[in-house]
Image (tube, rainbow, N blue to C red; front, side, top):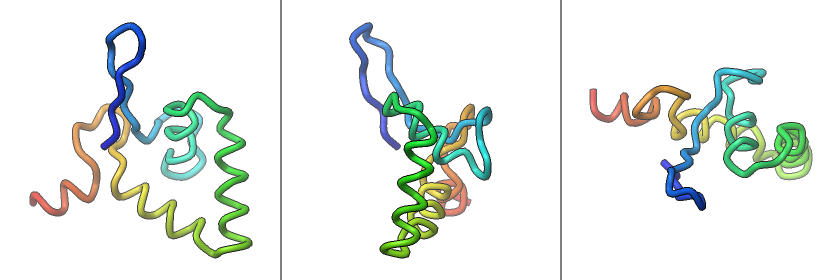
Length: 82
């Protein structure tokens, strides 16, 4: 899980967002975390899918490893710790 400190001393956490999601919220979460438009992230996934075939793989890995908004752990952590 990625957590960074911003200038105000509060932390910023990479998480899959509930709002603005199309599938699992991976793109919306990454866009919020990096402070860029969600459509830029979506286009990058499409480009990786078309040219390298990695888009779907990266998306599924992120879905498993990045916790959903409001959840303390990711899906992968739940499976491992169960």
